[in-house]
Image 1 (cartoon, rainbow, N blue to C red):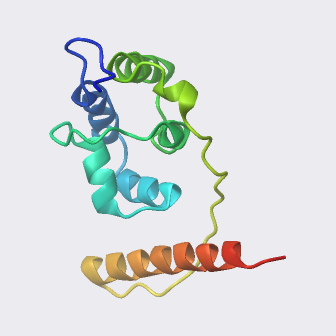
Image 2 (image 1 turned 30 degrees about the vertical axis):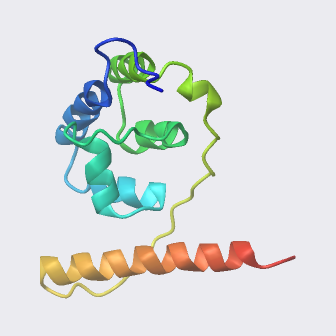
Image 3 (image 1 turned 60 degrees about the vertical axis):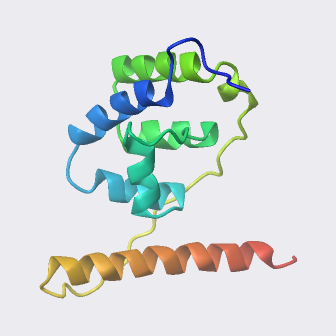
Length: 137
């Protein structure tokens, strides 16, 4: 079943998201990956109009917050999203509230190594949250 309006596709709203991300400071996509509890490759698929994968409705508010959408950008994105997926936002589950914690770690003097440490810390945090959430009170 195709829930899209004629001619409306995920690429339409992904172009808006891509433009917003391209006009934000370096690191926005990484912060978005952390906020969504995913990895950067997932965010790359969310932002790239070439990938037909739709953006899950429960991620929209997080995307708007992390990427600092202006009211006009948000309106353009939601109009295209609703054309591509009528009613999907109404059926989406609310996303879990997120919070940011800060850690101080040494600078390894190499961007690739620093990025690897950042990714490992984010993945460790995701795994710890899953583990603690699975514990019975």
